[in-house]
Length: 343
Ligand code: DGL
Picture: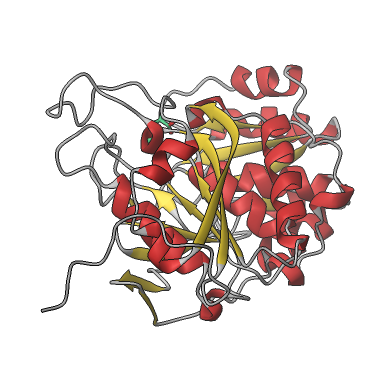
């Protein structure tokens, strides 16, 4: 009769891919007081080596080692931390001994980091972001299987060349499209355009591939980036205060993302303020507060006349990331709009 396979980590094997887990914190590293605390807990408590030790099955699918980049809740990410993480990941994927990288991350801003890395890391190797909606101390915690699937994906040759990926709740999402759409369910993440596929029992199943520029096809490169221009977002709503745009400019914004109602609409009482912002040399980018769909240029607003940019299907927080990178290369409205069509 076959004996149960040993759970002790197998020795490093050349047959298995080498995957590095770069930990940044979040709920996947969280801890609650009791197993009933699925939503009340402290994020960013468990170190990466303990996360790895908690899933001995990882050694069956990859040679895994961990690095602790940060130990923070992801709402506390800054441009400086994005750049620091990006440079570390770029160095790791240049190492011929590394086949893939997993980044454990809080879910709140995971989509911003995944999009940023998708735009700036020049590699074909899989880079997979993963988080969890429940801490590991909770009943039916989702972090273990999410992390296991992320490591499987990072070591899967067919994941090469597909850009940065997000592995959550068995789904494979593009780092570009992934968004946190529900704040309190394990099925929190989705893409308006659907997942690329799924990871099920050590196997990646693909059903489509990304069409927007990413990684090796990108004109952006983390290795040449030293800073990111400030870009801020103003949310649109009934009876909004146009002075919020002035506050964004006062905070140093080189572009203001208008997170508008519907098709990125601008209230009639706010148009003059936004036109003044633009005439002062600050770019105006119309995005939508609506989760799905995309903003149409020159529809309700004469973007050509006002010299504004539209964010296409990018949500405001992703438009912020792309605008910051684009402004590091150009101040031309036409060039900015090209970049928003292509990435
Ligand atoms: N504070 C949130 C964060 O670190 C917790 C949410 C999570 O990681 O799922 O993003």
